[in-house]
Length: 189
Image 1 (cartoon, rainbow, N blue to C red):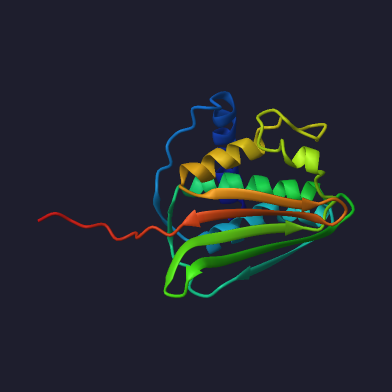
Image 2: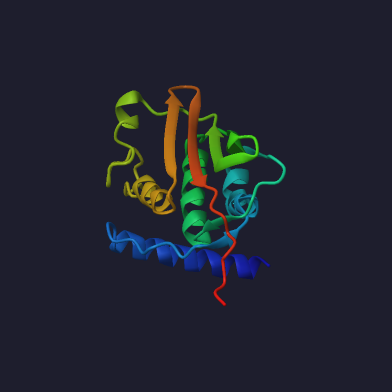
């Protein structure tokens, strides 16, 4: 299972390099029904050793009956993993990440699935917050400044949105909203 995870991660990183080299002309998402809850669990497994090394605890909360979404699983995994890694890096002395998966909309007429990633890190200043989606803007020594702009493009390519709120000294919350699209495909007779 670990070898399979390593192979998957190598493929994902290869895709990230391709996206970096082709920034601005990302491939169209290949939408297939998938579980966002399973995807969040997988991202936590992939980042668990980094969390352990940095003394970061993770808490996952998910409403019951989150529907399958039509998503490009690899693109969304790359986006979510980037957000989680950013959260981990914002807490060099340890902390807590909370991932919440909920549905939004009127009861019985939910229209979005919301994934929020909240950390207890150092936060982002208002001036930096205004620029976080600009390509090549980074506050990290080893960063290249494409993680969040790519994430924004990927989420918007799925018809969704990404929002970031932050308070310096308290932490940051990144919220991904993805539309619930009926996955039933009609067949012609």
